[in-house]
Image 1 (cartoon, rainbow, N blue to C red):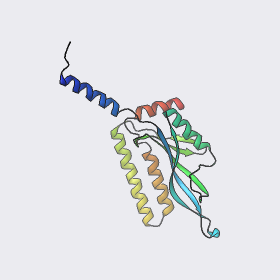
Image 2 (cartoon, rainbow, N blue to C red):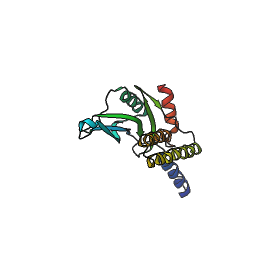
Image 3 (tube, one colour):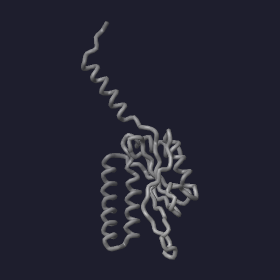
Image 4 (cartoon, rainbow, N blue to C red):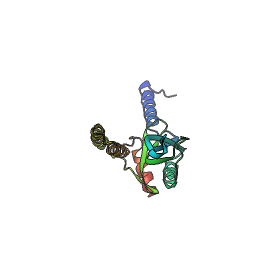
Length: 182
């Protein structure tokens, strides 16, 4: 009976662990970053908005998650679980895996979505982080000048840009799934 060296076993174990580490983790969770509207205490003042993240769904495959996001975008109203809210404006749908790695993101456009193009490399990811950081810095400056609406728009623009920051384990699968769904 042939013997297997310890080095061979260690090499095989290392390859198996590396393969498992790169395996996508399910289920996929869909959330939506947006603004929730609440009525003012005094009705003559209308309503006010608060940034809010709504938990929407859970899916077993990437194709199901893409279809679910597109279905949510077509709905007239997204339920947030907030009883006092009078409305919710979706700004960015985000799909994450079981380990909180970003899988995909999409910006609502009317009753459809515009998928954020996943970065192709770590270098491109660094550029996206740099650009998003600049937008957040501009948002901070605008908020300091009491331009809260402009600051909020800049923060959402940064979030949409960060939607491209798909985890390396998911980049190719995300691109392939988006091409199939187009």
